[in-house]
Image (cartoon, rainbow, N blue to C red; front, side, top):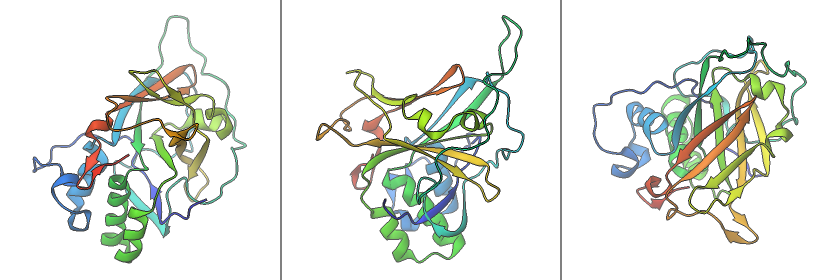
Amino acid sequence: MKKRFMTVAMLLGLAAATWGMSDDVWKSKPYTEWTDADIQKVIAMSPWVKTASVEATWKPVQQVNAASGQMTNSGGGMSTAGGGKQSGGTSTILPAEAERDAGTKGPQVAFNVYWMSSQTMRAALARRSVLHNGKDPAEAQKYVEAPMDDYEIMVQGADMAPFYRQEEKYYETNAALEIKKTKQKVMPSRVVYGKDPNGNINSAMFFFPKKVNGQDWLSTSDKNVEFTCKLGVSTLHAVFEPAKMENQKGPDL
């Protein structure tokens, strides 16, 4: 397993913001010149980030931390939530679904979905680590430019109860990336939960192979690729547009 270079305490419940700039900073200037405002724009408003809501049909987990509203780097290391070896699953299994009266609906819960294997997203983490955690720029550069064997999709929300209910293995058959035009669907090869210092689940990283039968199955010529993940009896949907996922160097998946 590749070594990671940044610990991620990802944002929960990002609210859209109005920025005093009209350009896409991931195209207009190198990440080494990004300001905090630039970084926030990348992690809140770029093509590598989607927000979707689903009906909560589950009981909430009270010990999961509430949304912080910002993306921060925690700890002294530099590895992503899917980085080093972690234990498979969790022993905290919740009741299957919340009890509801017939015909009623549960509240809408927002989840953020991040295309974390992109250099642009990793550059945002690296730049913030350099600005605020005193990380060596050379090490940050290695992290940004490290080759990725998989497409990495991270899910995070204020209510992570569905991930407490099911172990990581469950999501290997209940999540997918699908090219909408061709209907080609790929399941994750593995799923890893990220946890805060108290052991609470704060993210779920999905690893999708870049090749199927030895061939690349996704490219920036594909108009839409959809990430789906079953959460309770609801399904999370997040549609990415590969053609828009480009930085200064070109396509960035």
